[in-house]
Length: 224
Image (tube, rainbow, N blue to C red; front, side):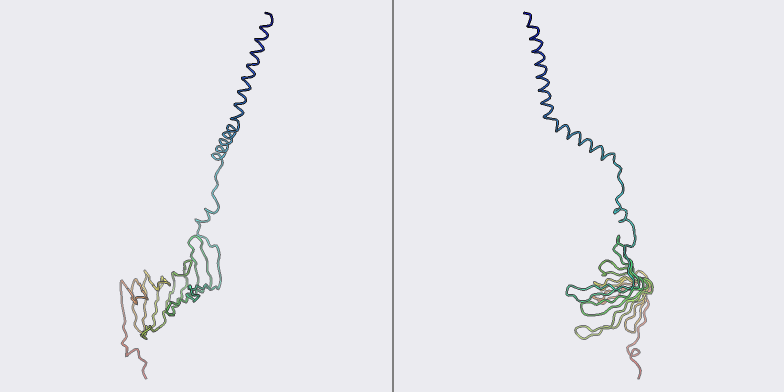
């Protein structure tokens, strides 16, 4: 009878230790998940509390700045068959990456269409798009289409366009301006406040104060 309290007390200790061991084993099973959760919460806190700085590339994209320039240069473009389509020469050129525009001083342009007709252009300054198919001429702008003959032998007279601003679409063979232009076709001369010309259709559209001087063919013939 004197040993029963000791046995009961030892049995209680053994049961408590066994229970604690089972709890520890269960906690050990979930310990990796708990650690991953703590790590995820720590990462989230760091992201929320880390200052965000503007990326240099985003700032540069919004600026209208020159990325390269050229002096006394020539840019040539060719068609799929390797034939020369256009040639642009300038005293100085500056390229702006945000608009892909090439700004050219003292420009000279030579363009050749599929029929071999040659068009030349000069101006104090020009703005060309990336592939050279569209050019805006400013300051003493001059575009000249040399005389040519079609397949039937019919002659197209020499044409000349003058103004302070001319917008040329080289691939479409179109020319337009929202400012006054002088059009000279052979010996005839026309002026207008606004202007559009389509070489493929051979149509010139002048609007505003339009004036024209038509020379008789006899007057155009040289006297002997």
